[in-house]
Image (cartoon, rainbow, N blue to C red):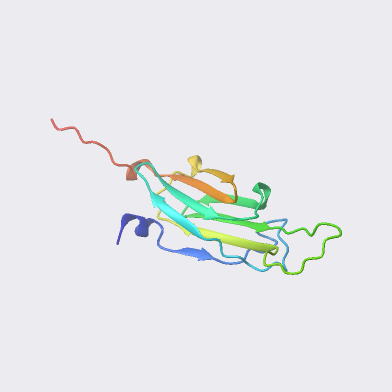
Length: 135
């Protein structure tokens, strides 16, 4: 088992509820955002694909043992416009990444750009490689 698998042994995708995100409607169907996790020397880099999700439609919390990304994608029909076919819809989502307290929750950073959420989870000092001096 790789180090990354032991740090993030499971990901859970379940629908968010209105209590999870104040602006998420309870009737909205759940979407399952695709995501990637990369391991670097200093951090874990999480990329979550959220087309159509606005910055204010996402909440990220880092607590002991997990990082939780929850939100909604809104769809507003323009006035006077009648769709003939539409695959996009309003939807709520939740993505929970569990870990063994391997990140520094105080330094987690996130950026949403062009429908892609980039979350940097800095590794706790105990996990970072360090050079050992030989006496």
